[in-house]
Length: 193
Length: 81
Image (cartoon, rainbow over the protein chains, first blue to last red):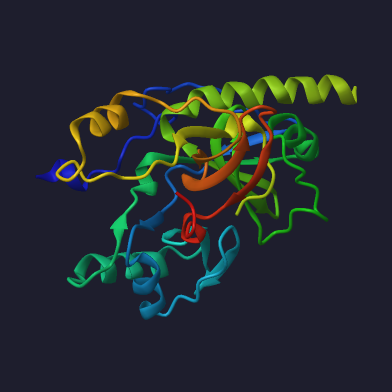
């Protein structure tokens, strides 16, 4: 079954359902990180398994780290690990989890169920203030905070990155999200001009 | 858990009700439990869900003024009906 090992096709990629969707790249830029490795665990036993593996878990709605991985605590038993620059550590953790036969929670399938997009650019703060009702200014929302809220009218998880903000949301809304950011970006550009 | 949010992030799951055992409940009481909803004034404890974080919690709401009096985690439910 070679097909099972094939790379998944995400909406904005070649062959995806939203292939050809333009990602804005001006004062507000959008980068699609959906294909970047990540691993989510959810359900009873998730936190205990990760702790036993050696991951020190942060408080709910806070971000921790483990061997270069970012550890997002979305709930008591809902944890998301983002690879990005630590794919090897993530792959090791994932295979350890897959080979474990004891209680270990459930895979929440975040690597395929969620899109991961990065907003950056000089007008990113203004764009986020239009997209999200929360106060995301740096003195209220630090680099270790997570907001589970609505961004661009869809349910999303957002947090700060050095470049701006990362947003995780239902992968089926990828094209909608890109169009929404584009509309907001156009408004921000006009506003500055 | 998440702090104050807009109401459109929340979904209502109705009032907290006592769970009756159908085997020991009289038929009339059981059908009342199944088919009739309470409609009184006062304060009610309801299940709510914060949709983006999928967090279920309880809220006390004044049925006359529609004011949310307080919200709390289900683990603090003792003493509520």
